[in-house]
Image (tube, rainbow, N blue to C red; front, side):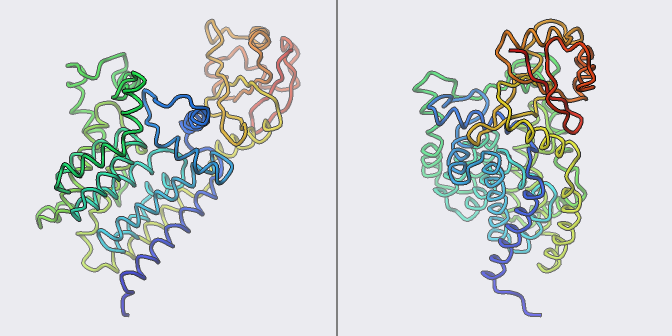
Length: 436
């Protein structure tokens, strides 16, 4: 059988990627990443000229969210559109850089399918960084600097790609000049407003250490090797990724610049994440680098493409079903769409829409006093004093953290509500109207 011309194979790969990722995003129309609520809230504030510089997240992603939301009308849909487009871009970059078969193989990876159909910054940053590496290997420093600059405007952790891309691309003045221009929306605003240039990792370091700690400290340095090892282990959790990573060794032995770039970027990203803590989402860039090592393992491109289709079918089957918690959250959000806020909730996942933006509810932990002693009368009094209109409770967190509120999970059967009025029970959640 005569192989497809390269242009036709590339077009077919991109079309397959667009169809698969769009279908998976369609199968998961609700919220899959809780952090996206804060991204949406910040994007809305950008439209009001506020929150231009943030201590933890750059301005690029919320700005992109504003632009795409203006086209589609809903922030959550916009987030999924950005991720799908970014994942298709990553597949396209791999196909042009390493061959269409490598693009098909990358498309089949669970990490790409999952985060390429989920709202959030991760796929956008990883895709732009991968595009930058491909451009750097082709000795295009201006384009590489622009792409990695855009990646850093999506997530600060894309900084791991900067030194690798700069070394591969050559002509550092051109690379860093374009990089500086593309990141100017962050550093220029930070300098103009007096905000810190570097992100504040205090919270992430505290999670990793179990207590407040500084980035530049002996404690952080002592934890770094173990954190780096854990980050590598997380990035190699899937068996196709572990097998494919062996191909990078072959590429290194052959002194292939492409393999050198992938290994260097994957290790640099793992080292950066290892300073704090790692999970599969945060390790997406490294996982994509390791997965592309399969390019040097397959004796024939068609074998790599066939393996990608087989792995992709398995990945789709694993990620396609709607989880019960996704369905429950969507149901309660839809039920509360016609209710008036502000809302008070036990779950950080709950949100309500305002003009197409996702707005978080106030969390129960705002209520002063020991959580286990918070009872319905106290909750009703707090809600009335703070102008809360509705209270939304999920059973898992209420029973674990606010056990004295557990009677409210019975719904209308509760006798002493302290003035709260039952509205509805949705998928195990309970919605109450606060006293006026």
